[in-house]
Image (cartoon, one colour):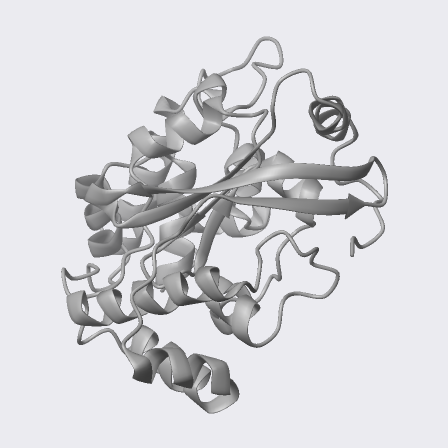
Length: 282
């Protein structure tokens, strides 16, 4: 029995135990097995169905850490199970000195239940990890490439994604909080190469970032109110709050609106419309 075969069997077993309702999918009538179909796992993990098939059949080797992390989130694995997944795939288990992109099963279940609230989740370096459908409907699907293109601090100081509305602001206080977060993360994860590269790139591209970083500014994330002009449903005014999952060192950005407001009605409409064939927002 090879390591790859062990990986395939483990993925199949985890897929079989995961009920569609647990991950926000409809039961969709009778099934041969109660768990996820390969197509559903592929959708949740952002992978092709063919690649999932090849992983389970032992025909795909050396899946990347990014792929493994996506599978762990999709299958709602615990931290111990996530570590075992990495071992089976022949990858180094993410160490305590590295920024983690693992979303614990309990946090993910909480996110799954908040379908009426646009939510996005970031690691300690503010790299976008995951988001719910309403967030994507509001802001559009994020860039497919990883790295700087998926980093909220980079969006704030250097370049937001094309068509990204001004809902994550560039206010001085918000930027100072980002800098404080990165400085604290650098102290917690001094050997994380990705985090060090992010700080170096920000220093190279943004004089504002350099000024705040060198000043030793201390900032905190205060609640924000933002207006988004959406092409399909019109103008939405939303409150933005940053929540922390401290044990996992994650940041959850949540957008909410007062019940009964005009924006609440438009947000409900957006939940129905989704992000199908929507023009960029600005």
